[in-house]
Amino acid sequence: MKQWVRLAPNDQVIIALDSLSRGQELQLENGELLTLTEDVARGHKIATSKVSAGSDVLKFGYSIGKAREEITAGSWVHTHNLRTGLDGIVEYQYEPLEDLNTSTPPSSVDAGRTFMGYERPNGEVGIRNEIWIINTVGCINKSCELLAREGNRQYAGQVDGIYHFAHPFGCSQLGDDLVYTQKLLASLVHHPNAAGVLVVGLGCENNQIESFKSVIGDYDPQRIKFMKSQETEDEQEEGLALIGELVAYAQTFTAKPIPVSKLKIGLKCGGSDGFSGITANPLVGRLSDRLIAAGGTSILTEVPEMFGAETILMNRASDEEVYGQIVSLINDFKQYYVRHNQVIYENPSPGNKSGGISTLEEKSLGCTQKGGHAVVTDVLPYGARAKKHGLNLLEAPGNDLVSVTALTAAGAHIVFFTTGRGTPFGGPVPTVKIATNSELAQRKRNWIDFNAGKLLEGTSMDELADELWEHTIAIASGEKVTHNEKNGYKEIAIFKDGVIL
Image 1 (cartoon, rainbow, N blue to C red):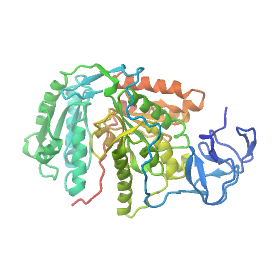
Image 2: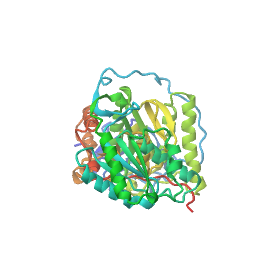
Image 3: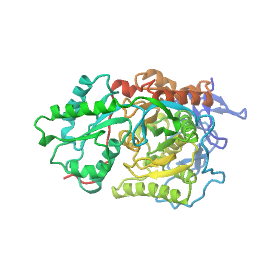
Image 4: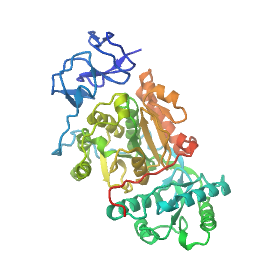
């Protein structure tokens, strides 16, 4: 079995595919032997040539940082001898790729593929036929939880489930903070996986039902019901009656063949390791490209994890206007750090470092691979819904729950969540956990839905990409359910950047 992998011909590092010991000899591509000068853990980097202090260290064919000191061949390369090369606010210049194709027609191979979904009256489609309870304020989380529990008991088997998404906001929020909450919740209300929605308010919160209705905009009164708890004698009785009406409405929909071009997917990575940019992220990139080629939509977020790789996305903008929107997306998020006196280019989390990720640009170069090679067609503000086919970039932080919630609000039917560390959580929509390595996939079988680690064990990228494509169609058709659905892990988190009274 091969002991290492190099990701680009000019890379100065290779990645250990298993834990290696000091003194061990590795045979490189040119036949030369490389002797390790120290122990190197699985997924971590090894220098294959000398790198002078202050020089760039290349991985993926790009710089992942600067050498803190001279790095000798055979050395372990990590945070002790590698630092970020990012600094300050960057000036960008529009340099579109020469072979950029902004008018690619749907591919003949997949354009005719369908999945079994639910067509809604407004033309959107859902992959589940659920009832969602959205509360305007956190004070009534438990009341809504009881409604969902009793609703599932009374209407079991009549819909795909009745779900409530607890959150702590909507009460004494001000300014942009309240706007973020309203926009996010309003976009969830519009999600087509919900055949019916019960909006529950308390009555004294800042996020009043009346003002929230104006953010929701036009709505179908058969699909969306409202209840103000303080004005109701028995909110459980009335709430269940309204849920009954919504269930009856949901039953008017039956699954039918839907073109795959109607499918929208969200792209997200959690705790990474040294294999994320080798296995799971490029695999999801293949899926994204294939869906987009068939006329579908992909949504990529985690803006801070674009830092250091943002020009790759900028150069794939469909036109100069979209390019300018990407520049604003990046710089506005950097200013968010500045406003809060935080370091813009902070290193990855402890889990990422333990897995072999040393710098933010290394994390970003792996992260952006989830977007494949497609043209960027639109940039979405936080809480907005995707309207254009192709690759959309979405404003949201790297935080798992916040970003998956934002992807759902943007209209993603399924979120593909790559991970080298593992996590049990899930968003309101099917959240497909894709392991970067087989050890994780085997150890956390009740969390992981798909194993990209097979790419390190002889399975080809083409073969595994086909398998993931078919797995996606099966999930969209309800033939497969994800572990977050099986376990009932359907949560939300709302971005906060302001004052609470």
